[in-house]
Amino acid sequence: MSDSLRLALIVLACVAVTLWAWRRFHRRSFWLIAAYPLTALSVRATWRKVALGCGLTKKRARWAFTLTPGALVSTGTVKVRRRFRRVAVDTKPWMWLPMPTRHGWRATLRLLEGQIPDDYAQAAERLAHSWGVHAVRVSSPRPGRLVINTTIRDPLVQVDHLPPSTELLKVTVGRLETGKPWVIDFRTVPHWINAGATQSGKSNLANALLVGLAPQPVALVGFDLKGGVEFTPYAARLSALATERAECTRLLADLIGMMIDRMGLCRMTGARNIWQLPPAVRPVPVVVLVDELAELYLMADKSEKDDIARTSTALLRIGQLGRAFGIYLFCSGQRIGSDLGPGVTALRAQCSGRICHRVNDPETATMTLGDLDPAALVSARAIPAETPGVAIVASQDGQWYRARSFYVAENTAEHAAKTYAHLTPSWDDLTAAQPVDVPA
Ligand SMILES: Nc1ncnc2c1ncn2[C@@H]1O[C@H](COP(=O)(O)OP(=O)(O)OP(=O)(O)O)[C@@H](O)[C@H]1O
Ligand SMILES: [Mg+2]
Image (cartoon, rainbow, N blue to C red):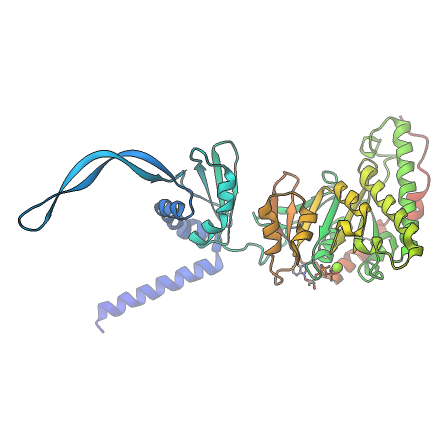
């Protein structure tokens, strides 16, 4: 081997190792400086082929020079003539230069006549395969324009922690696939449904919520008909915990009583909700965590019928009126369907916050996410079992996102519950009649 060849091989090996190390240890700068420009150029260069393959082009008549075979000359070759005439060509939608994002790139397109964003949503999977990326999502910021967002690799395989939110009743529970924080804000969306198959990460999310709410001046109430195994370890930070049906009925009756008291207080002061009350008399907000909601509705024998009817009515009343009086619901369950009774359907309608973890059947996804974009339902069913905690979240902005909760081990949640046990308002204080004298 000549010296120059050896030198070239050594240089090549050094470059390869440097690139590998750069990508391995500082993926972000590697993506922005080295990989993104090449990706952007290749996406633009191959856009016509990709759009054609995905059925996103339109035929248009254009003037063009064409070669027309003429007479056969004596040498045996065909003489061709150039002619200027109208031909039908495939036109691609105009694409601006793709811009880099945290996990991929984003490109704006101008829709061709007769196209709607849904045409692109339907072709999203085809586009993802053509570009070799994890996922393609489309949105339309204004009529005639379309934004294609690609994520190269699933950003939810590993999620790193974010700083906790410092605002009341707002908890950062995980990360969205866009890289933004996944925030549950009870003051914006008061009641939530958290559904998913077994081992999909429902309780982990409840743990994340508990850890986030524990340092805040709020009361936490638990309903755990799984024999109390989920919430009993957090009892120190719970103002009340019900683990049996009779306890549930009593606790719900107390919550309704508390709500009626708060109504009276608001009425007396002319406030429409507790947030309009002076801080000195404003009652403590209460977050009600329910694990395995279905258990509250399941009837073992006929004697439980009345209890279940009372439970169902009470939950529904909290769902309807709780927001104004600072009582918020977070209901987890494997199935939250109409087969559990009409009470569940009505409660579901009151819960505008929807979280759907991995599900086994399309009905559960439909029940949880309602009539959201059908792609959201497909996405919910495609969540792999290896990534518990991944969920489809119907967000406050009317969009849906894939998200993953932070992993919060039971002992972390237990530790938080013990650390902030001194902030737990006593149930007796909470349910005591509200003060009548309101300072001016
Ligand atoms: N965000 C996450 N990141 C990593 N692991 C997670 C995450 N969420 C959950 N897990 C893991 O998945 C397992 C199941 O989670 P979890 O107990 O929350 O499921 P579940 O839906 O409540 O199940 P079940 O219906 O049986 O109560 C847990 O052991 C936990 O370690
Ligand atoms: Mg659970």
